[in-house]
Length: 454
Image (cartoon, rainbow, N blue to C red; front, side, top):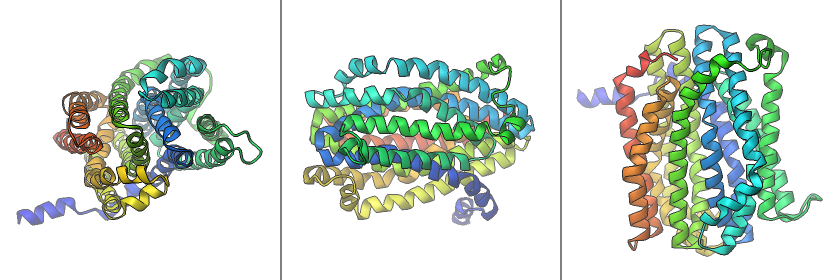
């Protein structure tokens, strides 16, 4: 009887699954497409050799540690927008977004203006290899130029997710990816009448492509239907009322992302000390890994929106049911993808690089990552569901605790001070996701998040 009860809990509910998937699939496709920015960079730079591949990898992680962390503003916008949308307060959705856009530009424009200085200042910490440092500095310079576009992009994504119109994220990501592929091909290799710029071309292509996707989202938001219904970008544009709630919800998200992305950068730093070939292989694995992670991120974004909307409409039981349904979908889908890592790690790596040394070094870590996919899906969806309910501080605290006491010590000790090397460093990922999944499951099951007011 106990086994039957467990199986009944794990079984998917057809109606709830359709509801989650209808909102989630554009986000999953959109997030996957968005992640293809780094995938395309990695695949094309892999043809230039280990040094550019390694430099783009570790510099890209550092870029995300800074800019993607600041993009946590979008989570605050999504949480507030979803709750107001569930309440039927459409004009307030626009007011929240107006305030979010103001914050995005206030952070993004100074970072973009400081791009050359940031590239020079941060590049020395990338690696002990002088060639990787020089190439990484160039990459950072041109990626930071697109910071204002990226922050604006994530605020608009938060708005559209909050009102349940996730298809716009998908289209924007397709626009971004298409532009990036064309520009990468042209600017890295000097094709299509464009100058040959190598790693600088990859960074420029990514920044321009994000700008193209952002312009698409802005055009949709400014269309007559959205502008009239949600009072977007109408006077008064500077809505002070929503500044403090956005900051209050977003600061823990920003701190959490700084911790997560900063830890990821430390991971890359440890690997860079193991060797340049290992760093190049890690960049390839990261690119593959992030594609699968986007399944969980997309389902989590949908879950966060649904939880917020149902809490706004005073239906907490439905919010909980949809959160668990999205979690099961993520665990099953990511677990299935993880099987590919077991079966064909070598052929997957060959998509990105033809370097036999990089492929040989990367096969075992990629194989081992197959074990963590289901746990990652659980952790991602439930952490975003809690954020969608407004419990951003707990997610931050859990991230700080796990990274500080478990993940980073394991990565450093096993990677730098044992013969395991790269395999030891990647062992930290297994510990991180399993512990995070357990903590988030416990917190979500307690149900106190249903009483949070935002």
